[in-house]
Length: 414
Image (cartoon, rainbow, N blue to C red; front, side, top):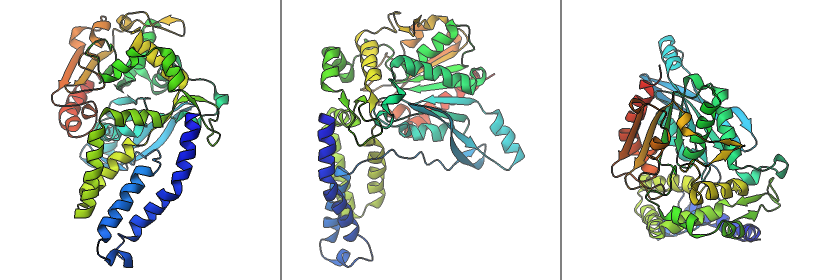
């Protein structure tokens, strides 16, 4: 019922949102007579703030048209390499007319970036992908909003997530592949590679795990505390809802994106309030660069997706409440997950010193689990002054983290 009420409220707000959008343009456009009136910038800024607070945020585009690779600006073509009901495997193909550059591009390592299915779209890793494309062939998992998946496609559980990762690795080819998982997928990625190793399959050359909840008993955060102080039945009763009739997934049980977004905001409401006020003042001052930075950030931050209820509840139980992976008691599709069986895949773990989502030590715990990986093929990095997002996006990612990731992949590529 809550989801239906949310959609009803959204439909009631639509006229005001459209009016505010039109008002912002009419009072700010250079060719508009209204923009010449005294106080026009203040009125326009107020309208735009109302518009941005009330509008729907659709999934953004990656929009990576080109990158500088091997000293040349090369165009990028984004296409779907493999389609699954709940996820698309996306390839970012680099092109060049220069024979020498083509040869360099072909020799670059292949990387699969496993994006989180935890509320935001995979475009949250745009900076991660853009930076990697300078020196790598890049694929990414692009998870589909569960409200857009018809009920006829069946349920999606954490076990299915693991199966998807194994299928994607096989499709690309594990022999020359390096896997990078960011946040939530560190757990299913470690499970997928463990199961492949246990089955005698070829595993990727390396796995880089960034800010993930491998063992949430270490340095628990506010996110971990919420998951452990409520019984699983509480989550099923209070945060799981049916998709309304106006979406293809009508009737599917989901953890709605708008609830996840509310949780994001509640973690630091003062910072978001201050950011919106700064945006309003930037518009008044004519500081268009800062205003545009605000728009880009919140276009991404406010674009959320619904998660399948089965997958969400499985994750709460398996990762945050029962800690089955670090305790060695996790079975996926009837097979025990044994990270110690991994012997030929190098391991690199990365954590942010100030991460308030996955606390210090939670990702590094993978080293203890992967006892079969030789010590010389393991590495850990704690990024000083970095929060959760800083380890895969922004200046610290580009200047501090990425050089080490690039070197680690290169060292284990042959």
